[in-house]
Image 1 (spheres, one colour):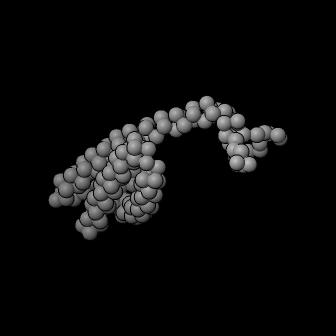
Image 2: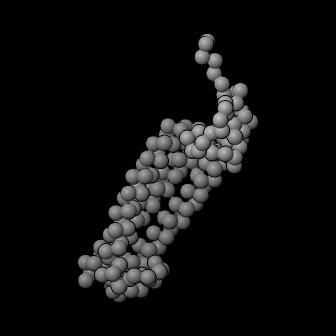
Image 3: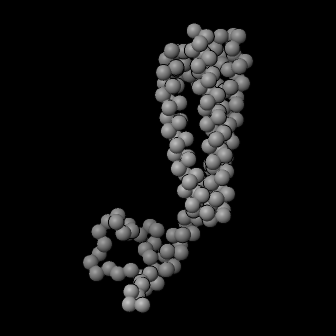
Length: 162
């Protein structure tokens, strides 16, 4: 039975490492967004998607372990108390580290999300200033039927005769 508890501790440690990696990616995304480096930002988003697949694998591991340990529906803070006495301190440390990593990830991702949202609002404003549809207006090309006879705004036209 101790082997299953060890597996769960390994799962918690893997989650902590994954969150640490995601936090680093979010910090890099923030720097790329601040530098307006879309190439790096795109690469980081791809890495983040790969991490999401890794987390899906961890979720499957968790789903197998929880019923075996009788921990279904047990809040994370109560998990260490359900471990054998000899392993409770190690479980407390793993849970505390996981919570700490999660808090750091939430903070980093919140900053990044805020900056990206502000930048998108600025882009929407520029498009509107150039004569494009407002952000809350009709859908862009490819997302809905365009009215008959609609033409791009004058600032977006190109003279192909040149």
